[in-house]
Length: 183
View 1 (cartoon, rainbow, N blue to C red):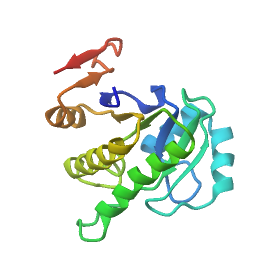
View 2: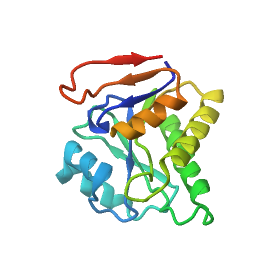
View 3: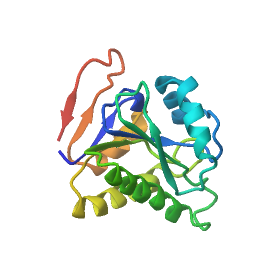
View 4: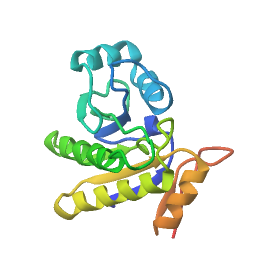
């Protein structure tokens, strides 16, 4: 399947590349960024990220994935939502487009994205999902790559489920041990 949306912890997903919602400066943040540093091994990932330096919003760079079930971590800085009139959608589109382009250059056959900017950066979840689906769809018209959009919370998964015909769910509220395919 070239594209799927799953409910899971992105640090547990197996893919050639895992996308990190990075901070512009090479520091360990909270949310997805903090979880990726912890799972990959902060003592190795932080020095690798520091060699890159600052990242501009929309840009994508990569480091090794260290302890993650991936070869690469692609770091991209999403936009902070102001009001939708400050280029936020364009920057978010660049996050997805540049991450996918970098994954292609790295010869990745699979990539997993979190919902970029829709947490602490305040991007409206439905708008962020529309942008993600649009950019992923454009990429898949000309490329062959397995792309996974990983959502963690139930509300985001339910929103995704409304927009997608087939959803794989990897986290159960009680056990986190089964897979459900919804159609």
